[in-house]
Image (cartoon, rainbow over all chains, first blue to last red; front, side, top):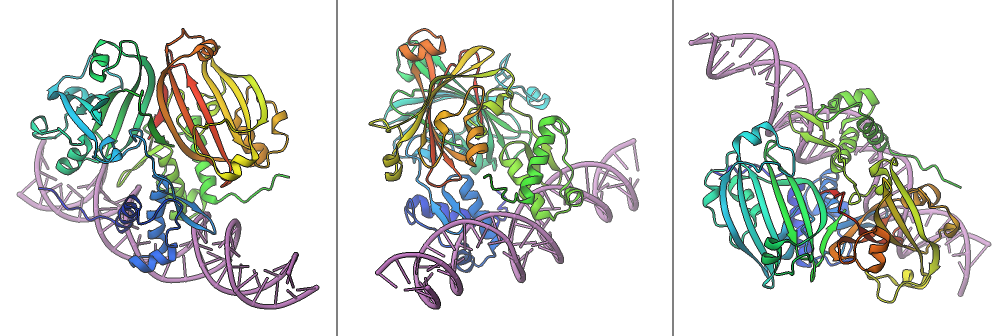
Length: 238
Length: 238
DNA sequence: TATTTTAACTTGTATTTACAAGTAAAATGT
DNA sequence: ACATTTTACTTGTAAATACAAGTTAAAATA
């Protein structure tokens, strides 16, 4: 069923170092082992080690300094919805709950969609769902998602409670989110949004419209997200 | 004065291809020359070419597909303040004007600053300035900037009208913005903000707090930006 | 002692080589 | 005419090597 594609060595090292940083083995400001030491430790050559470090640097886990080394960068403490990793993993699964407002159903795309669609996407419709995400029982994200309906069997019958959409896509369909684009706006909460996010009407709400690319070239995931930023800020790197 | 540091070859190729894409030599959906062709064309080896393409890919100019090639990605048409490049270059200098609200002055950091400061930063104070940026004569960004006061002679007497802060830092002080982090919030406009952005009081405004890293390890640039997102959205890649 | 120089590290850039894996079109077979 | 296989291309991964350039601390020198 799930094809265990061989994982590149540089990716393995990336995962190991990333985990060590997240687990606190290497703390903020610490110097990572030098590239040559990592070569010896993990039995690979410098280009391979450098590819792993380069990815870590791009993801903001380390900063590299010529002549000095790779220094562990401080980790974001706020909600990292602006990063690729997705909300659930960013907050750490601890206090984040997901509530389904509308279970996933197969529908036609809305009349005037927020992003232009390819012909193939338009023909095959999309999977639609609405979720509410709460941090410490405070509603933070009201999330409307559209997933291109391209060979994702049984997705409408899956359990999405307390689980990341991205995780399900990855584990069950081998779909990885690669990146994407987004538009941001500050808007006044309408009746529906204020109801779900427990805000007064017309209170400012952060609105994100996102188009996410996947490892499947024809498959995109779209989200319209309304954020209650009264208590928490949305955090991002660039 | 300005030391002409040798520019790496992969960087040169990056600049050339980037310019070609921006100038429309390669259009959206076009296939770039293959890596081997680029090797021949520019007289360099594949790892060097790949380093240039990898940077282009990270910056969102191209998407790479194994077995196919590098495909030019569509360019953002909206305002790219979430990208590193800075506002001026992103919009294209055409209709964007900058108005100085408060000329740059050397002051002490505010009492409780939005980001933690290093000792060195705290001791030496900061350069403070306020700017208003207008697109088609509509005020879009109200921008409060703090620059660490580390060896930037005569900066308080420079002309910032219609010029990007980043450009001045780069051209006159060899300071390059490398990346950074930001927090986002939707807030109601207060008296001052509504005055400058020509909005009603309590209308939703997008608030960005940014910390930007530079090629000078001790130097950071901070901005508190209030955005009028009524007409335009803020665009970003991730 | 104080200063300068050197040496030993670090990461950055670049070449060369080899094979794996994905894509698409041409060649082949039925 | 259609389906399959082959082939030639593409990018991906990985090794081995070399030197440049920035940093730091030890060593040499004044």
